[in-house]
Image (cartoon, rainbow, N blue to C red; front, side):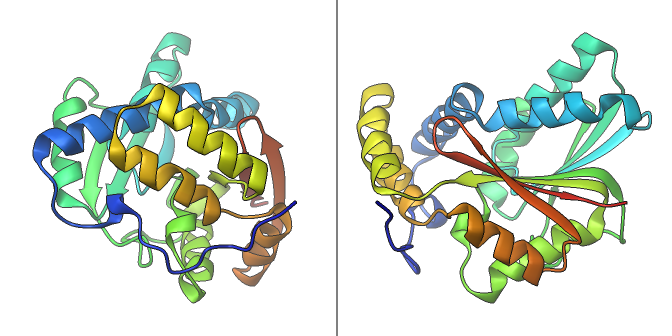
Length: 233
């Protein structure tokens, strides 16, 4: 049984303030969640399917990168395979970007940059692959369409948007699971709320079509993940 999307709710992660120690702890927990609960795996799968057709180096953009844990994981994946990659990791949160720069010092393949996800500071078709992980549900109304339009504009080949599937069972399972694996009150609050702000597959497809994506599809993945993929000719 479905749930109505909870529009307009504020997640604690979106608010200013909080101590540096609390922020680091939350970012570490989110990186663990991305690694083990599906977000990073979706990127690996897409890169693996495209690898033979991608140029060297492959140019990748990660929008709303946060702690840049997914770019670092992608670099490790690429190094193991001798795959040349250059990653632009963009976020608007200066405190988080500073922590991401510290954590990424041994990853010269990654360039971190501050910028607006709704007005990406790049020309059309600048990147072979454009990623956005768990960002879309933070937006409301026309910003969702504008965001998807910007991702598609700067992509040369593929856009991959990873977000959460909304529903009663995903909400309950997320609430219980996050209380088991994390002691962070912010994660306890924001995780289930993110599910309430998530999407149904048909909603993602509708947004992509409004944004002008010529070829879009949605696939379901374990642990209530949805992958919205847009391909360019």
